Structures are given as C-alpha cells and as structure tokens.
Length: 267
Ligand SMILES: Nc1ncnc2c1ncn2[C@@H]1O[C@H](COP(=O)(O)OP(=O)(O)O)[C@@H](O)[C@H]1O
Ligand SMILES: [Mg+2]
Image (cartoon, rainbow, N blue to C red; front, side, top):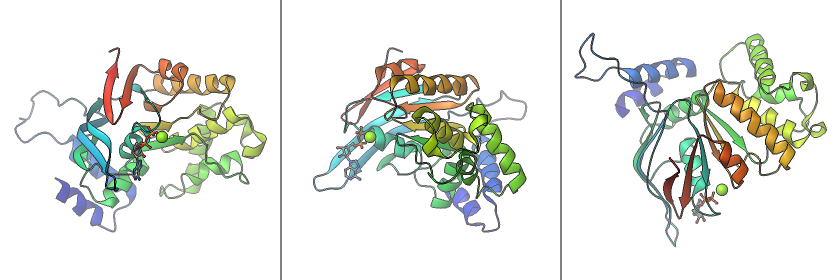
C-alpha cells in the first residue's frame, strides 16, 4: 500500500486536497475479504501506534520511546504527563509526523505513515493535524486575523474563502473582537487562543498541544482548558502534553510516560 500512496504523491499535478481525498479513499477502502452488503468497517482510529520505538543514535544511544502502542479513537481527549526527558516531545513529534519511528508503525486515520514518502506525510500533516506550542509562535507585527490567515496560505483555497475560515476560527476561540489587534497587545491566554484558532483553521482531525499552558498563569490556563473542553465537545480529537495536574485532570483519558514507556492511568 505504501508504494501506491507514494505513487499518488509523486503525481505532481495533484493538489494537496486531491491527495488527501485519495489518501482517505485508500484508508477507508473495504478489506479484500469484505463482501458487498457486509457489515460496514468501523472508522479507523485517529492514531494507532504499533510497537513504536524511537532511538537517537548518539553516542550514547538514547532510547527515547520503547515499544509504545497506543490507540486514540475519534473524539478522544488524552493527556500525556511525565517527567522532563521522559519522551513526551518525542512522542508528540512522532504523532505530528515531524519525526519517524525507528521501528514499529504509526497509522493516522488508518493510513500507514512510518515508511510513507515526505509528500504523503506533509499532505497528512497539513490537512489533518493542528499544533499548539507552549510559546505561541505568533508573528508580533501582524494582526490576529493575519496570524490565522497565514496558516491557510498554501491550502489552495481562494483568499475570500480563507478570510471567512479565519474569521470563523477566531469566533470559535471567542476572539472576534480582537481581530485587528497585534499579539503584543493581548494577554497570554488571548495569544494562546489565537494560536489555537490558527491550529484549527484547516479543520484538523487531531490537535496536538505541547505544554499549552506552560507560559500562562492559572486564570489564563483555565481559559485555555475551557476552550479545549469546547473543542472536545465539537468532536475534535485532542492530545495535550502537560506538567500541570489541573490540565491533565481535564482530559478524558490520561497516560504517563516514564523513561520512554507509556502507561495508561485510571482507565
Ligand atoms: N534529537 C535528539 N538527539 C538525541 N537525543 C534526544 C533528541 N531529542 C530528544 N532526545 C533525548 O530523548 C529523551 C526524551 O526527550 P524528550 O522527548 O524531549 O523529553 P520530554 O519532552 O519528556 O522532556 C531525552 O533523554 C532527550 O535527551
Ligand atoms: Mg518536552
């Protein structure tokens, strides 16, 4: 199947949207043994990690993830906790298709990604994954609206439609009254909400957040947690890495990483 996907990706005339449509068709295609009229195949997990390891060659070699298996279903809200150096960012980089496993595979919406080409991986990343980071990464000289609009620049969508989507994303994070402001004039919580609007403007299936409240005081953290609750209620699949027990407690599922090994908590 990987060869087929790579073939799709090499078709230079394909727009990113077409490629995503075709990837979805491939990942949702019935299994060979299924018969017409048979039971519908259940929707694939958003995330399926199959015995994933990630080693950094060093020296010394670091086994940052050891034999991690994890299924995240559509609409799950998962938090990941663990001490510094335990492998949390390594896990998030793998989930975000910014890095590849050393062994094992990662299926995103049923599409195997471990050995997929960079063009397949970047089409999946751009079309299905949103990222939120601890330090917002906003452009300080641009307006709130521009910061969100810039994320839609390579979507192939006409500018008028991109404007509408950006405004809708800002409405979703309750910042419609701040679209002409620059980030420097906003509170920390408002800045992170702009970053969240930017992350959801392309309607991702999966939102990945790495310490999203790490730079915020408790009032602003609560604002972000409430927003995550709303996104979860809308059906978005969320993975939040955090040191903060209050943030972790809001998730519907909790996992811990210790020394590269993942364990499920209280399930
Ligand atoms: N690019 C890299 N090269 C070598 N070692 C790395 C690299 N990235 C992370 N590591 C090591 O992998 C382990 C896990 O790191 P990381 O995932 O960043 O931890 P966390 O986010 O939980 O603090 C650490 O021992 C770290 O030093
Ligand atoms: Mg980290």
